[in-house]
Image (tube, rainbow, N blue to C red; front, side, top):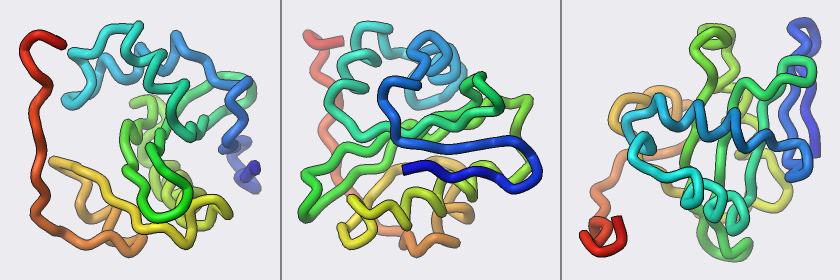
Length: 140
């Protein structure tokens, strides 16, 4: 599935072959939630997830990943847009693509965020308390 912006030459798709792992890793290293991940861990996460790339021409400038069973549950994570491309509504475009995606649109979705509640609420996400288990020290 692919979406194209009418005037800004951006596009989003779920084509795994187009993902640019080096770019994704560099983007995630700038985030508060994934800067600690090794490249090996990031690569394994791509293999086990439905991934979305945001592109400006052929250059990947954003990313979003969904962990899902495709039936009852999806965890949205690693939503990021390169700083040079922010402020153009691309985060909204990623979310619109996500909630309309045929493999996900009828599935419960969850996510965690420290700072983008307003964005996600525009797409039907509600704030709820969740539980988590930290990464065991031996696995870090």
